[in-house]
Image (cartoon, rainbow, N blue to C red; front, top):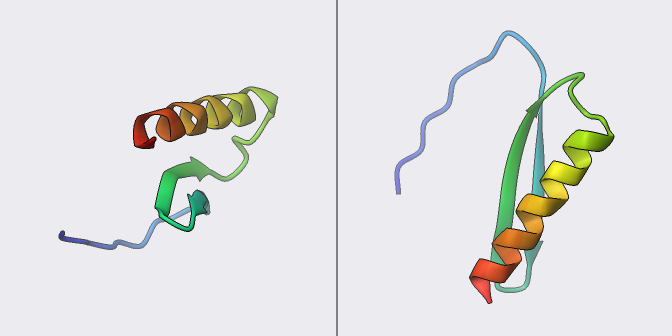
Length: 54
């Protein structure tokens, strides 16, 4: 696996969901974009990620 990093001009938020077996979801968001709709979208992505992993 390869990884690269770069510096951004603004703030970002990384949301990580995991269990003992590993990471389910990594979700990157820009600062100021967090609202009820975004939270629901993230939880929907998590539900699908859990479904695929099990």
